[in-house]
Length: 282
DNA sequence: CTGAGATCCTGTCTGC
DNA sequence: TGCAGACAGGATCTCA
Image 1 (spheres, rainbow, N blue to C red):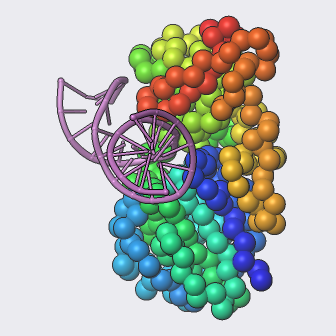
Image 2: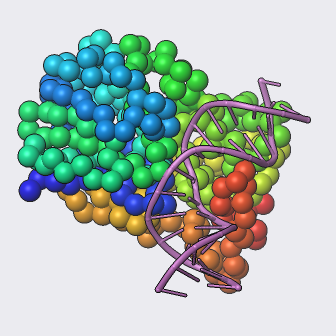
């Protein structure tokens, strides 16, 4: 009766940095110092084919620590790391050892001494990789700065944005610039910064970069505090849904929370739905 | 190198 | 009721 999920659990949920951080922290409690007794693949065709040799590498190997880099969960062993991405619909189920019911969209699982951890992903945008050296892995090595680090500053963002013609929204969602910001928190941070998401990056002023850096940090920290955004049924380790959704200012909303009479503009930028107030955001 | 657009996937929703 | 088509989006890939 210990079955519970520790990931966003429905379609239309987008695990971004706060959600992955929350999941990582939950996973840490279950996985730290544990020995992997088995690794089984039910369906290897995810975003990338799951490497067949993972089982032989991690079997009887002990987890040293669980970390996060951008939107990736890293399970670190003494000789390397597993890199897990949840894609859009990936969830991790913590199951009783006796649970042998493989459900639709279950793709792989770890067996520990007391639990099984099973990955389920409807849209198969998720992935799992083994890396002998985490920071040299192709998924990790190109990643930009962690937004909650002190090195993520207005000077950095200003410098990086020079000569860039793409929209600010796509710019801050580029994982090679700053990691972990996805569609929801990009919209939120741009609203707090009073910056129009379609503005060309090279036109950002220094004070706008300052606002943007502060807003990104604020939005992400706040979301972590509230346990990640709930779009439908995000469940934390205790099984209670997160409730940051109610805290969202513009994403999925109809009216501007500041100038309440203005209808928010809803357009696609780079193929992604974007919400902003054309009165407040210039 | 840059940036725009296609692509992968499947459950849900809309319209005929 | 049934079914076709649109839609959602993270990250990579292709192409100009």
